[in-house]
Length: 163
Image: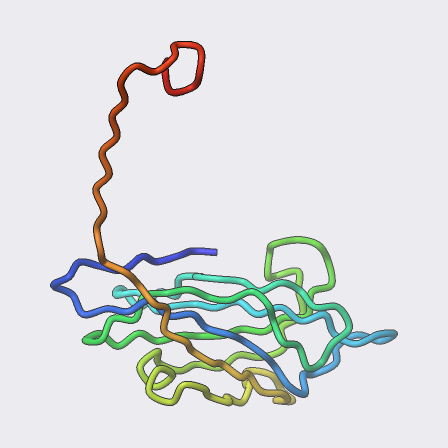
């Protein structure tokens, strides 16, 4: 999972954490339920999608609550477009081409931060079914700096500090 760190003090930013869930997913498996996983993308300046996180796969569940969080930097003065793609994982392979696509949704991080939580319909399939629930939480960050200085006198050369 990619992790973006806060920028400089001159750039208004905040580190946020996204929590992802799905409801009423399409069932693509015959003898069991789908095994969903979600991939999160951020649109870059050159309009390409960059993968910024993947959740774990939850076996046999059409209503997953993913434990894996997505961390990213919210830039107040920049439109950040997010895309969430949901897959039914059939083989243990990181290639998404080998998984069954269940749908996707898009939003901006600004819309998400102002709402706190969004319920977005999944689209992109002949039979659109299911929805993505995305919650956002701002992470506390400390910009305090601490300087420590140690010294020692008369230490025994045999112990750890004497070396």
